[in-house]
Image 1 (spheres, one colour):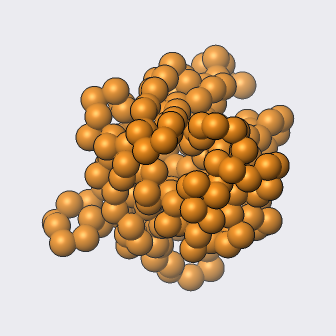
Image 2 (cartoon, rainbow, N blue to C red):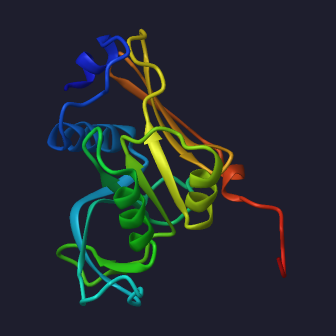
Length: 189
């Protein structure tokens, strides 16, 4: 589904399939000018979790390296999923990405993402949100289907880390780094 169709849709899921979601995400990420966008980036786990029975390399859909000084998170991994995908596997993949090193194509640069997002993925609450926050995983969604303007929101912690708004062909951005401070407990629990 194109951006124009997304903005004109009424309470429908934003995409019919994963390739459409991938194309539109790339368009938003490039148009905002906040990131150097790398697609299909290969990486390796820094350690193997007990649930990994064999050595597995990773491939993240997008690796966003901030160009805008307002984005103080470091590199961001984005996993694109088709609507209706299993929530558990999407979150597990995103968790793996913040514990992996990715190699930027055609360079000798290795990057470890500091945060990971799943797109398109509704904002979560309760136990799932708590697990995602502690694992440095967020969600990206469009909260305003069918309105005159569209927003893409990078949700993490207790708020919206990045908000991209598109009115006509112009993309504007807001960054709120206060949401990175999740949890107030320190020390022994």
